[in-house]
Amino acid sequence: MIKAEKNFTMIIFGASGSLAKLKIFPSLYELISEGRMPEEFKIVGYSRTEKTDEEFRAEFAESVKHEVENVDDKVLDELVSNVFYHTGQYDNHDDYVGLCERLKEIEETEDRVRVGYFSVPPSVFDDIIKGVGETLNKEDVELRLIFEKPFGENYVTSKELKRKIFDQFERNQVFLLDHYLGKEAVFNLLSLRYANSIFSYLIQGKNIANIQITAMESVDIEGRAGYFDNVGILKDMVQSHLFQILAFLTMYIPRSFESKLVHQSKVHLLENMYFEGSPEDIVRGQYEGYRGHDGVSEDSNTETFVALKMGIDSTNWHGVPIYLRTGKSLKQKWTSVVIEFAPHQYQKKLGEGRTNKLVMILQPDESVSFHLLTKQGGRELQFDEEVTSKPIYCKGDCTSEHTRLLLECIAGDHMLFLDFPEIYEAWKIIDPIGEMFENDKVPLDMYEVGGVGPKSADELIERDGFKWHNFF
Ligand code: BG6
Image 1 (cartoon, rainbow, N blue to C red):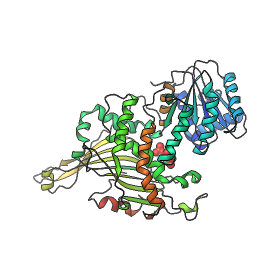
Image 2 (tube, rainbow, N blue to C red):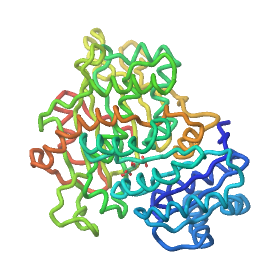
Image 3 (tube, rainbow, N blue to C red):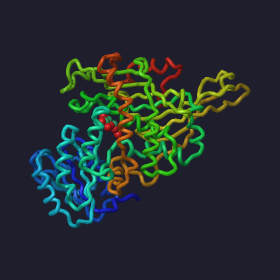
Image 4 (cartoon, rainbow, N blue to C red):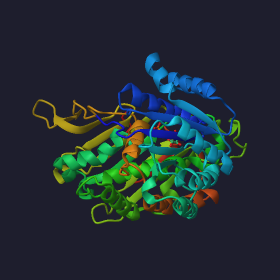
């Protein structure tokens, strides 16, 4: 079982925010309830709001109970007794000095790692980088930092962010988190190819008619108008999560899962990934009623749905269309990868137009299955589509994504985190699309809440003679 092998202190900047409540606190509960905590750990919330330890503990416990089913009160009490709070402004040096003093009072041993978690909007990244750089980073205790996306707003600002971070910190201290990489099912896209030669034989451009990656969400923007309306789903989901899924599926398999090799391979893939650049190859949608949310302007053109056609410029993937789509307020939560295989010559002659598919469902219930055609009994050559019945999914030591990533950070392993070169490559693809959106080169299509997105998304793929495979 993966455990935190080092004692640690986690300092959560932005401890009153929604990321902390929804993801980080429940993960810490998961760590303790599954026996993954080290001998000694401390959790310190740092935020601007004035609060006592007791008040913060009560909020912490409430969030855990809200997010986790069947919480064991005794385990939660033990967790919460290790939770503290420090009120501080993000731009006040003295508050960070105070934090360092507080840590010394709380921590029982110096033999530990401190993890600073940036659970804050990017607008305060600079202040915290400076404050932590001048204080915590000068202490003798090993310090690591976790940043969550967005990593800049475009290629240029992501480079600036990198400069600011590395002006203060060493490369090995910095962990750039995309929570999709902590999902077993996402990493499985690579590890299945690694372990099963059959996947390596099959997942090659010459065998494949098209690839479809779908990330549908039934939720709307969940009160995050301040963030979402400025960003849009292209940057929120495609630049990060969808490109990472595509990379794990199509990158060359590194000879080992050493962090450096995995990143090299991913960057190589992302360098060769492209969007052709024509407005015809992209659909921009917005769900009906989006403009009525508090904080969203009445004439907002922010997209809540995107479908696009991509390609990879390499000998292996040349000519294989890759369709991505993602949206909010759709029929249901559903993340999947469908690889549709090209029919062979005789199959076409038989008039059997259906194709084989490898279907990888990442959420809500992960599974991998093949869709095959089997002959019906009798003289006629007639086929039924059958799905292999025993799905492949995570067995054994499975954790939720933030839990896994916290453990990897404590272990000092960067393999499941991003590296700036891959973030740059992703922005290079996204930036020109963002400009097309800003200049209204792509129409904004309204779509119904609870459906599968605008009709134009179907037309995008049907133009190439394919259709979306919706296995939900
Ligand atoms: C986040 C996005 O990164 O991922 C959200 O900012 C989105 O808008 C979320 O809802 C989806 O994550 P998951 O794990 O629920 O698929």
